[in-house]
Amino acid sequence: MADSFVLNTGARIPSLGLGTAKTEPGTVGEAVYAAVKAGYRHIDCAPAYRNEKEIGLALKKLFEESVVKREDLFISSKLWSGNHAPEDVPEGIDTTLEDLQLDYLDLFLIHAPVRTEKGAVRTAENYIPLDVPATWGAMEKLYDSGKARAIGVSNFSCKRMEDLLAIARVTPAVNQVESHPGWQQTKLRALCQSKGVHISAYSPLGRPGSPAFKGPSFLSNPIVVSAAEKLQKTPAQVALRWGLQMGQSVVPKSTNETRIKENFDIFDWSIPEDLMLKFSEIPQACPHKIKTLRAEFVVHPQGLYKTVEDFWDGEI
Image (cartoon, rainbow, N blue to C red):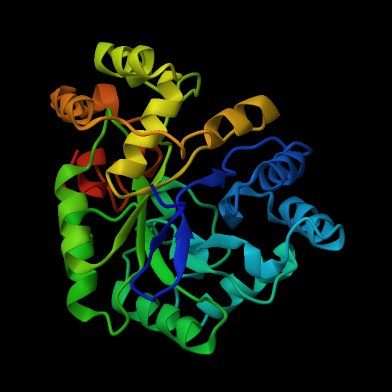
C-alpha cells in the first residue's frame, strides 16, 4: 500500500494524517511535532479548532530544526462559516496562512455546508442560506493563485456533491467526511470515486469518549476484533488500515505520542481479501448508533435546518 493517494490535481495526499480538532491548548503543538518526527506528513487544521497559531509555532520549529522542509508536508485547512461570501474567502485563507506561518496550503476545504454572516456567533439560529456557486467561485480563484494548491469540501452529502459538480469549473479534489467501518459511506464513496474526488476520512476511529458520541464503538464489533486478533494488530490499526484499502486517506486525532506512533504502524501489512469482505457485514442500518457526528448543533426550530436529516439531505 502506497503512503499516498494521487489527487485529481496530480498532487499526492498522504494516506495518513494527524487530525487537530478539539485538541487542548498547549498540547496540539506537541502532538504535531511528535507526529512529524514519527513520520506523519499530513497535518489537518481549521480555524474552527482555534489552535492554528500553536500549530504554526510547531511547524516553524520543525522547519528551523531541519526535521522536514515545507515541501515535505501536506497542510490542509478549512474555510470558516463566516467567510463564505466571495469577498471574504481570501481573508479566510490569509488568516489561516498567517497563523500557520505558511505561504500556501496544500488543500483548502469548505468546512461544512453551514454559513453565517461575517462576525456572527456560529449558532443554529444564525445560519443563513448557502450560495455554493459564489463561494466555490472564490475558492477556484485561490486555486488559480496558488495559495491553495488543491480545493475541496467537507461534510458534503451526495446531493450537495452532485450540485457542486454541476457548476464547478475546478472539480473538488477532496471531500473530507466521517468514514470508518461503522459508517462506511458506500454511496458517497462510489459517487466521489466516479468523479475523481478523493475521500479523506475524519474520525476514522469514531469518537468514543466524546460528549457527542452516542452508541457502541465499532472498535468492539466482533468482525473488527476478530480481524485484529488474526493480524496481531489493535482494532484501531485495523480500522485505519481498512480505510486505506478502501481508497481513502485517514486523519485520526491523538495527542498521546505512543498512540500517534501506533496509528502510524499501518503500512507494512494488509488485511486479506476474505477479512475485508467481512467488513461489509457490519450493520449500517442504524446510523444514529454508528455515525458519531450527527450535527445536532445545526438544528433550530426557527433556523435553516429544522432537523438533522435536513442538514444531511436525508442521507443519515
